[in-house]
Image 1 (tube, rainbow, N blue to C red):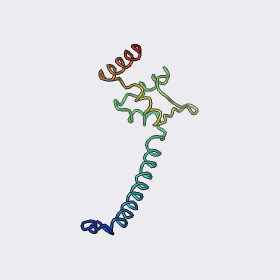
Image 2 (image 1 turned 60 degrees about the horizontal axis):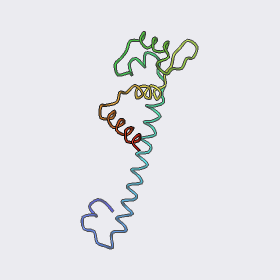
Image 3 (image 1 turned 180 degrees about the vertical axis):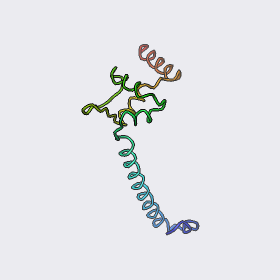
Image 4 (image 1 turned 45 degrees about the vertical axis):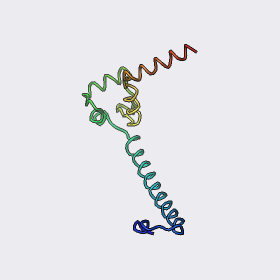
Length: 119
């Protein structure tokens, strides 16, 4: 059953149409799952050198700045011999951790704490 067959459906055609739709949804679901898995593997868990990290970070810091962060233990890193490596997923988490809350989020937290104390 193709798309054109859906225009004039009778009650007797509904089971075939439902079967067709279920098959299409399953195919799309499998495709989406494989795309999601490959994106996660390729983008989240790749290793970067210090130069790669400098290019990856949004503000494009200088390499000496990143060395200073490593020295101060402000950024997650792995050291193999004398080389520094950074895992993209850890860097993404680190970037999220540094996110500042909006005024609305702060107000919501404050009101939730106030309500909790009130009870």
